[in-house]
Image (cartoon, rainbow, N blue to C red):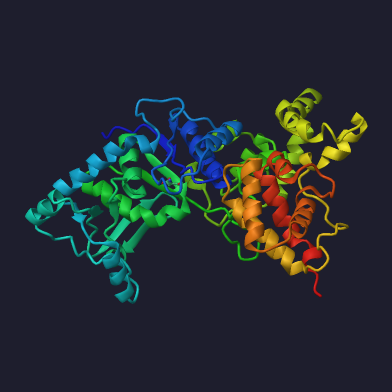
Length: 483
Ligand code: GLU
């Protein structure tokens, strides 16, 4: 009889930005499944794409998952039998495995230059737009000669040329893609770094991952992954692609940071309790049964069955999350409630950051609450604010605020100096006078004319809340009234 495989699941986030609510959603289902099956839950950071890696992102991902109480059994910070768990520390393994495939004839060196690839692409029409397999059948003597002559090359996987590539998805059944739509994927780049496909499969195999539970958006990568497993002659994991979280709008579009907050930092800053957020995520694609909306992770584990996930796009409705949070808040007793305020809202850290900004501005402590309110609140009321300076139009201000929002989206070193630099540069680029730039911005961010220095205040309010306020003010009727 075939021995049952030990259940080992993983999440493999790439530290490319703020910790995303989608990551928490996938984490929760992996975590619950591992606990249900008496297996292990692993965190692996997929940080090999150096160009997209953002400073501090890996730390934020780990912190926010810990905040949610979804702790891993093995991971970069706690080690484990298959360490290292940071992909960038495993590159020698990826290189070794790519070369193994070349040796067995399942992959090949490709010397084509970017210019040639662009030419090929430009000439292509119809469905297939991919590499034309120019180097697939080069003679091995030629390859050795060119490599020893120092010519740069990537390693590509030989994908099947005919037929279909298929795999079984636990929730979706058999998925098949015609081979003619699949490219000979790059496994190892010219600089020796692995691509996502190679690193992901090699690491999953070496870490003995039994089930790959990840978001729907990776379905298109799965044919490449199963081809890789076959090329190595490895047993495949079970694949389970979870439905993507959707906006509550009519088209049920995929949630994205452009439209609404998706950062776990935002929800924490907004004052959502971790147990409420976890409960809410548990309702995405799964139901507890009966009419029961409120349940703990432990209760979820008890009832959980991975095959019961429903695929109709789960709607990430912040209104429902807020409702759930309210239910949880009401259940806190006095001690818990006060502890939350002390630890999360009026924490030593938060008050310490505000102190230098308000020290000179507050004459008696009775003024403190009023003068500091915008550090603590979420949305502001813009109704009576003079957001459009004389000589400027609503469109000018919208252009200015949305331009800044885009730049702040990319600013991951959130400190007043860098914020200042971004604003000054932007102001010069759009040729705004300081007065026309900073006053509407100050009002958008703090809701008041007399706030402490702007960049310093923005640092304290936090990246997520500043971006949220800019998004909100951009939607406000003051800036959108028909003229
Ligand atoms: N690094 C991928 C991500 O950012 C992992 C996808 C997978 O789970 O295979 O989500």
